Image 1 (cartoon, helix red, strand yellow):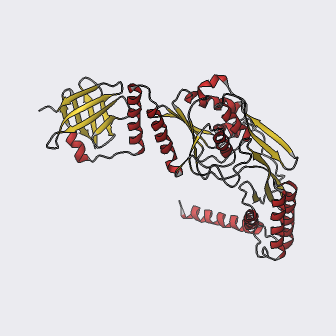
Image 2 (cartoon, rainbow, N blue to C red):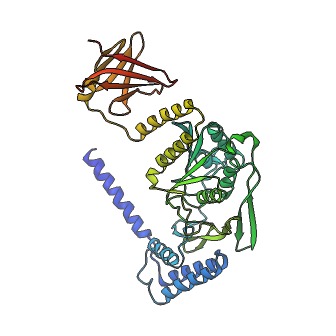
Image 3 (cartoon, rainbow, N blue to C red):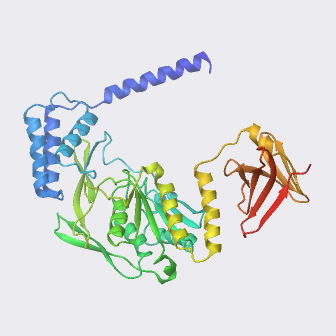
Length: 436
């Protein structure tokens, strides 16, 4: 960049900072009072627990009266302080206060074909589905970042994901980074794993004094899922609708939850302007599970198998394999599961074999030749393609990007590699000695 352009950029930034400084809002004592009173009224009128709302309002009004807010002129800092004070009375993760200097009646951007679509943002987020895949051992894996699937387009996306995993041995639903969404989506997903219509949640609206019931809807096109083992991964970040899915399915004894206790947010909220650029997200309904007669508010959902969030997936995989192997009906099933388990363990805990050891494997064993090229061990059978090998253990290798054969290098009494065993996924075993 030239010195002139650099100087021009610096001047522009300084002008922008000056404009920002001139336009920065400084709260007056009257403005702070207006915000406190407006927030208090919203809470008293709408907050899900009337007695808690009264205590919250009384607390921030007392702090205002005692001059505790006098030194706060920055509206963003004031919003943060008010939220901290309200949550000190009752730690509700759905309660939020924000400040936005922009007028709430700003003209909207001109409509375009894209933003005419009410589902555009949901489609771009794939309705919350981040990843769907088949893991070793024929384990289905669904990662969901949110519950945002609507009953039309989102339902089709959900069905597509479930079709992909419906014939697996077990399914893992990963909600470790799922911050919530809609209770309708959570109920939709539950319905695929249940064989009859079930009331899973009743939501009580404190403002209208009305209840809303959420019933699952079984789908006979997905009968294979009705008895499929389901494991749900959770963390402290799992929140709201993600917790609803985990909590209700656990109450039905339909899932095994692996990971950490969830965030503890069982309320629903609406957002409204209060005054002076401040908005308040007000929790106004709560959930009631028909089995437990309570919910997960502030306590979270306790996992069946507790482990750190980073270890949750591997822990679930091992638990699934343990169960599958113990229930295997034939020796072929046991062999295949053990085969997949070794692949899984090597994937979760990669083994490194140094160059010196790899070079000890180099040689010809019958019609199989092993070479050391570019720091990697390669394998070629006469008349067949060459494969790069990757380690499973210190003396067992597999072909890179394939799972149908494994090679074991065997030492003699002098600890020299003198023969190999080749294992195939169909159960065949072939042996060859190193050529002299």
